[in-house]
Length: 88
Image: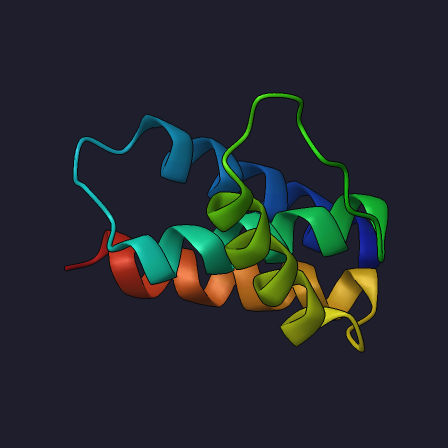
């Protein structure tokens, strides 16, 4: 997929996921989070003040699972998962 087309498809998928009325399982939400972060800010993690330590640990674990992906690979994975869960 061409870089510009991938970028557009990624942001469209991100918007659809954000506007979805359905509830996603927690593990899927973490996957979306990690892929989004990797796609937009490769290999970064920021701790939010007041965030529960367990939540931070789950986020960190999800990020570690995708850290070897490039930004484009993360975008493709995000689009794939979005299409899979939004079609259910």
